[in-house]
Amino acid sequence: MSAPVEELDRPTERKKLAEALDNALSSIEDLPTRIAAIENSIDGRILFSTSLGIEDQVLLHAIAKARSRIEAFTLDTGRHFPETYDILSRSERVFGTRIRVVFPDAGDVEDLVARDGIFGFRYSVDQRKACCNARKVLPLQRALENAAGWVTGVRREQSTTRGETPFAAFDGQQNLIKINPIADWTLERVEAYVAEHNVPVNALHAHGFPSIGCQPCTRAIEPGEDIRAGRWWWEDENRKECGLHNRPGGSRNL
Ligand code: SF4
Image 1: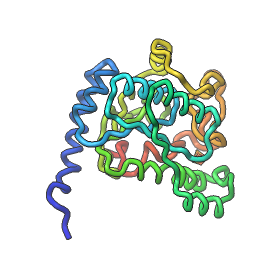
Image 2: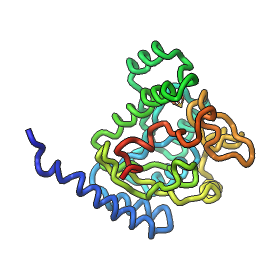
Image 3: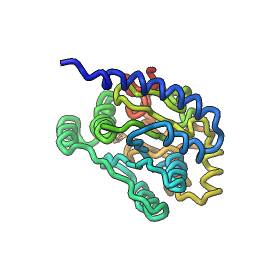
Image 4: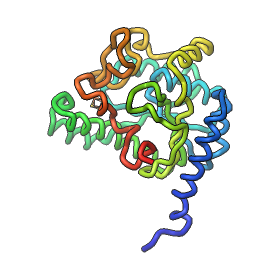
C-alpha cells in the first residue's frame, strides 16, 4: 500500500525548511535569536541531545533562559564517568529543568557483552562500533522518533570529521531537521560564554578532558593535541565517530 501524499511530501518540505533555516541561522549572530529562529521555523517536537559537555551546557543554558519548548535528553550508555552524572544532576538543579535520560535496550547490551566481553570495544573498530551502536545509536534513534527537529552542540572546529557541519540540514534517516546552533563557534567563544553566564560544567574539563564520552573510551589530552584526540585514541583519526553525527542518510550525506 502506498504512503499518503502528505507523508511523501514531508521529507521534501523538511529538506526545503532545513535549507531555509541553515541560511537564516548563518545570518544571525547571537545565540538567543538563533534559538528563537529554530523554534519559529519548526512545528512539532524539537529535541536537544546533550552529552553534558561544555558546548551542550551552553545550549542548555540558552534554552533554559529562553524558556524554550526545546526538550533536552541525554543518553546513559552505562559507561559514563561519575563526574558526568554529577553535572547532570547539578544542571537540573541550576537550570530548574528535567533532562530525560535515555537508556540502551537491556537485551542489546547483554547480547553485545555476551559476544564481545565487557571491554570488547578495545579489540577492533567493528566491535567498538557495535558497542556504540547498542549503547548510543539505537537509543538515539528511539529517542528521536516522531521529532521534527534535533538540536546538537556539534562545532566545526571539534575535529576533521566535523569541519563542514551546517547550521541545519535534513536528516533523511530520521526524517527530521538536524540543527547545530553553535556550529561556527570557537572553543574560546564557548568558554567565554560559560564564564560570562556562570554556566556549570563537567569537572573533568579542568583536568585535560575537552571532549567527554564514556569512561573507558576517553582520556585526557596533552597541550597542543587535537580536541578529540582523547576519544578512541587507539583508532585512525578519520574514523573516530560513534555514529551519532555521521550516520548514513544523515545530514553529512546530504
Ligand atoms: S564510547 Fe566506548 S563504551 Fe561508550 S558506547 Fe562507544 S565503544 Fe561503548
